[in-house]
Amino acid sequence: MTRIRQKGFTIVELLIVIVVIGILAAITIVAFNGVQQRASNAQRISAAKDYVKAIKAYTALNQRYPGTLGTYCIGESNITDFDANPDADCGLSNNIKHDYSGYTTTFNTGIKTVASLPDFPGKQVPVTSGVTGMGILLRTETYDPTGENIPNVPTIIYFLDGANQDCVLRPLVTPYQGGDFVKTTAKNSYTDIGTACRVMLDDPAKL
Image (tube, rainbow, N blue to C red):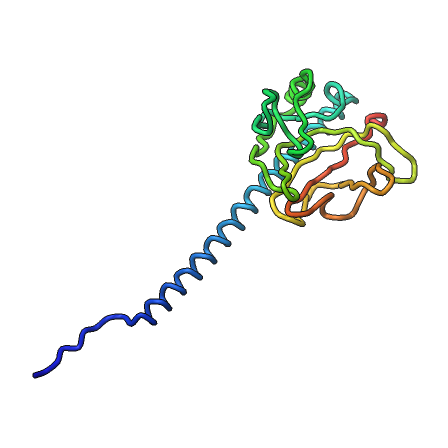
């Protein structure tokens, strides 16, 4: 009697196929996440660049910044999920900034006279352990670019997904030991598991 040999995969062959599929799936997921991160960061950088251009256009026309300078959210796409406060939130989750006393509204209204407001992504991004960053904010700092303190110089602050990302915009500033800020040639201002970008704007006194 002739035996009919049954064709099929052995357990070893099946295991090899499963392992190969798992490796390919892991590679695909990593590649997809990298594409998502680059796309999200490109959108953030583009929006920040548009804000800087719009602010420079406003200051060139009016020789001043729109509204009162301080530390608050700018734009209209900041969201409100950091805390129970109904105002828009932005900045670091452990140091939340809000739309204080209509400053954001005044700022936005001024910018709209020269440009449309960019849509800045509202998604939170991890910046350091347990701390996320979100949105875009305006903050006044004291700078020490040449050994003399220059107070109340505005800066745009935004966050990128992933460590050691290039902020693209210049000039960047970073804190030094004295507590003030200095211009830097680095590609970012602060990086851990995420990247914080601090872009120095024009000194209001020199507009």
